[in-house]
Length: 230
Image 1 (cartoon, rainbow, N blue to C red):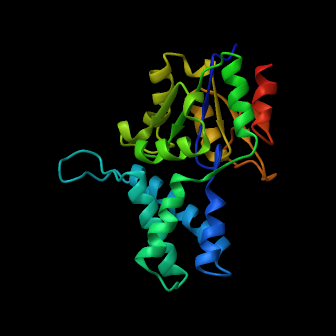
Image 2: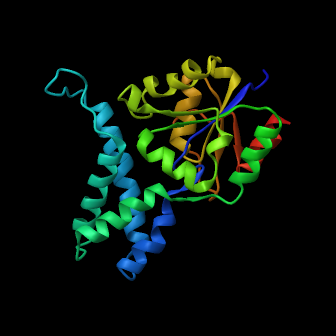
């Protein structure tokens, strides 16, 4: 079945969430990697708890926190867990790093190639619009996406079906005709369950998550997206 457009996850796929390690290690020498890893783990854990909990807000709608708030809560937990000498200034600097995360080196060429070939490229992310816009601008990718889709519009984080439905609903293309690309195996598998054609970018040679399903394709970098389309 022909692929009509490519939908990318943002964090960990296009943008390296662990690029925060450099600043973290400068602020807290010897702790940079531990800060980055725990921060990311708790960030994802909190999104899942929020969406799976079934709790209702005071207004009677499903409980939700913006991704920025989730990310901040995860960072504060990390600081307390690692017993860091915390400060408002360190917190502000580290949070601001999410506006300028480093793009993986192949991103620019892959996105430019899709653009020149007339293949629509979109982002579908847990990130808030206010978080995605600056990091995309910082990387110089603003003109390379037809759509930047945030789950904030449905107040449900991945792996909820409502989050994945945003792709076909926004682009007007059936999920099976979209190539959903993520470097997070759980994300690629959940998108496969939803009905996308999927690609897992397994940069680090990790084993497949044991969920009884697997992505349609597996690659080691975003350049493999071009091979699939070819």
